Length: 159
Image 1 (tube, rainbow, N blue to C red):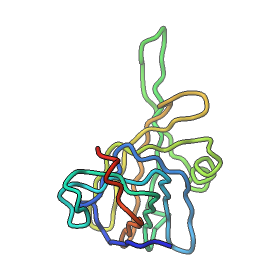
Image 2 (cartoon, one colour; image 1 turned 90 degrees about the vertical axis):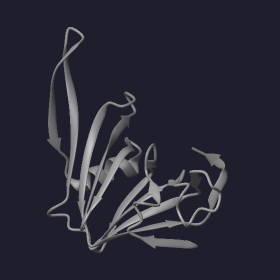
Image 3 (cartoon, rainbow, N blue to C red; image 1 turned 45 degrees about the vertical axis):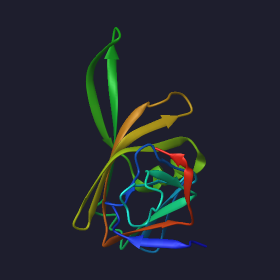
Image 4 (cartoon, rainbow, N blue to C red; image 1 turned 60 degrees about the horizontal axis):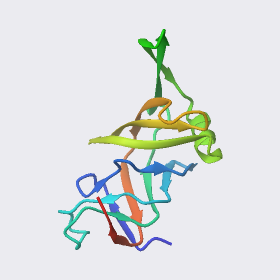
């Protein structure tokens, strides 16, 4: 199904402004699908366009995903008379997260990504059917490796 697959390619790919359309766990692998693709950076050896461009539909798989150590948090701002008075952090169960993503109740959009040895850290926003950017989120994923899949880069979709 996929023409291209590279491992641990954080230096080649950006998830900024990318929306997760489907999430699933099969065995010990967590996979996130992006119908609108992700960004292939201009200086990547996998991109011959010379500009940062989108791919077509793409997927990231977190291989040997460790659910017991991985964490997903949402941050909710609370207001009093129109002024933000505090922010609360709430842990969200992974199965609940998958259900909300796959049902379309939540749109998860990435802003920042950081990679480290066996760990990926992402920050972004959650759009619900009620509001745009209703929550901010943080997800830390513990895994052995990440695999990035796509078929084609789209030169007409420049950053």
